[in-house]
Image 1 (cartoon, rainbow, N blue to C red):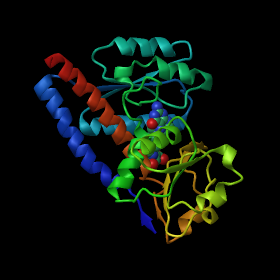
Image 2 (cartoon, rainbow, N blue to C red):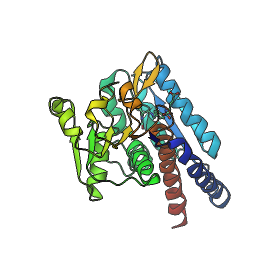
Image 3 (cartoon, rainbow, N blue to C red):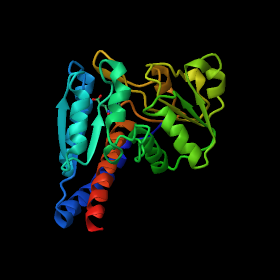
Length: 272
Ligand SMILES: Nc1nc2c(c(=O)[nH]1)N[C@@H](CN(C=O)c1ccc(C(=O)N[C@@H](CCC(=O)O)C(=O)O)cc1)CN2
């Protein structure tokens, strides 16, 4: 088995980003700042995601401010961060509780600051699809016979669009394809899965020597679980993301790339 390790690639990216931060501070007096808005105070998994982003920000010198909101204060907080010139990126940490507030909250983030790239007016590429493309490029994976499982807002749908835009032929599946999925997936050389259903991809669905990228982030008792079943990890012929240190660390790195891009745009707009 060969591992696609995001953790191994992330240090190079961090070094580049830390240099960019120093330049923004020294040459432009801009202190890049990310605001994370959460509305789900009870969730341990959300706290883990937020902690990972705070730690990453610390490592590269980006300020990370976290706002814990109630359903009543959520939109007002986002609107006030939109107006705050010291904030360069605003994200709504998902999942939001109650879930029906998600759409409105994401759409409330102004385009220039939507560094998660999740709104309908997004100007930035979303983090997890970018992370997956970095990972595949970093390990020279050939993008042919690619199958994406899951068409969610965070991963499957935007990744399909990004791959198609760069001319890659992609097959995409969701819960409506359950009957044909095992047979179809066995034709794929690269499988990217992000359904949020732990164990949904089993060893018998995967071709010999395939590449498997597991971007599932389901929460089971406060623990983050991927989509691939345990038997997949026993297959020695596969090239696969590890249970920890695969797509996740690069997702955080890709988010901060967008924060720095947003801050650089502010610097450029001041020069013009
Ligand atoms: N607003 C957003 N919400 C969510 C996103 C997102 O991109 N934007 N993605 C996921 C959660 N996520 C970032 O927010 C995220 C998930 C996992 C990791 C990560 O590095 N995981 C580690 C394991 C951590 C652990 O178990 O302790 C790993 O894979 O090694 C980073 C970010 C849903 N919500």
